[in-house]
Length: 421
Image (cartoon, rainbow, N blue to C red; front, side):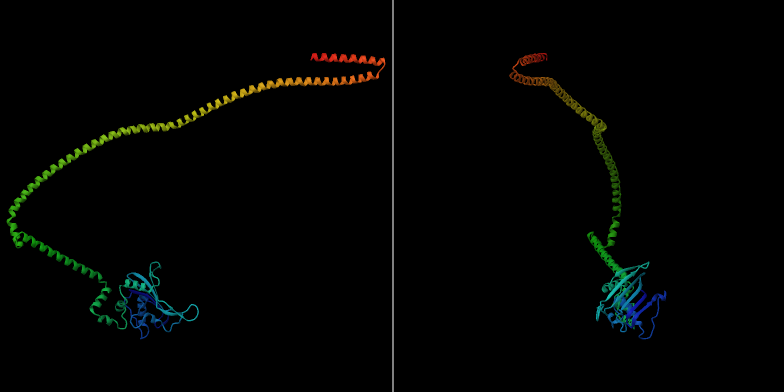
């Protein structure tokens, strides 16, 4: 871990804000924090430990007791620590539980502890790891450093002669501390794996020895030397048996070749039979395919003739409709002729009636003339009678005779006129 910047606000003996920029020291791996007693050297280490774990370097004071007694009431105690670890940069901000003035009214309220952990990425960005929960921030710091707060106090921060406590710690505690400090867990796991492998090999060797002893006892041999002597005695017989075995293997190999050739020939015959069967099936399918092709050609021809067939059907339908229309027209024509003849007959009758009517009108006119004449004659008769009654002398009688003759001539003229008509 490499400290970069430390900011303390109302922490320890510092009532205001104090900033320490460790980057100004450059790449120097060692530096000295020096000053008189009470100048705040241990406070710097306490601030670093408090920012990381929420506890100070010693067991004398808790983090909540690190608030400066000289700080103003409206200034909250807080520590921000920026550090570099394994090539990554982090900044953690932590504040303890403390009293602060109420936002409204008089009095004070308790401010809960908070912790915020961020990772600073390239380009000036920030990646939030923990927002405000204290326990989560402490757990993340322990995972990053690999140390608990007690181990951090003994290994990383050794103020006020506490290095002596590390030297006086027992071997188990020192082994645990140095193991976490120097990351010896991988070597311990490797050692344990090698021990387990050695134990397994040892068990396998014992099992093989027991199996070997069992085989020797099964062959009625006392040791490996007896087995080697027995093998030496059996070597000529073994050589002869090996020669016989080689001859048998050669014969078996020749028989295998013959068998393989026969198997290949059988496979060829089977393949020939299969191909013949497939050829027959293909011929049968060829007939069906030819039939289907012929039907397809007919279908294509029908498809090409279909527009002409539809036109023929349309023309035939139009012809039938025209014939029906012509028959209907002929029927209507016959009906019209019959009606015309009836009308002409009625017209002839009407003309005959008109002629008779005209003649009747003419005769009525003549009768009207006759009536007028008759009325005039009646009037003349009345006048004559009056004249006869009034006249007593001969002249009147003479006039009467003349009038009577005149009437007779008129009646005769009327009679002749009626006969002429």
